[in-house]
Length: 117
Image (cartoon, rainbow, N blue to C red; front, side, top):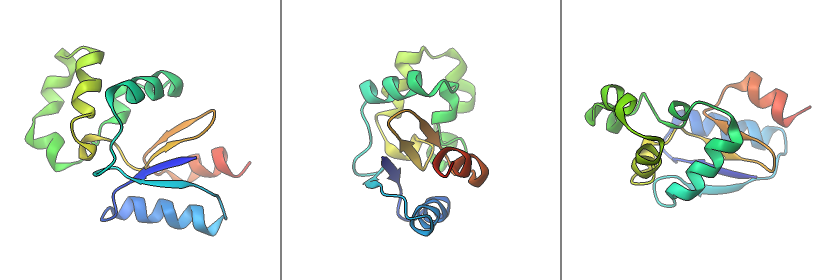
C-alpha cells in the first residue's frame, strides 16, 4: 500500500498514527517531492469510482489562490489530471493506493472499514 502524505500536514500525521497503531504496513511518499503524474492520477481516479473533485485539496492555499472552485467545472478531466500533476499540494492528502482501493483524505470510520475488516 502506498501512502502519499505531506510531513507538515496534521491530517497526514493522524493518518500515519492510525496506520502505526494498527500495525498496517505502508510505503510512504512525500506528496510534495514525489507527486504522482497525470497518468497515475487518471488511473487511480478511474479505479476509485470517486468524483475527480475528491482528488483536489479544496481547503489548500494553492487551490484557493488559483481560484479552482470556479475553474474546475469548465475544465476537461485531462486538464484536471494535468493540473493535479503539476503540484502535490493540489492533491487531497493523504492519498492511499491499495491493491483494490483508493482513499483520499483521512476519515477514520472509512479507514477502519477499508483497512481493518
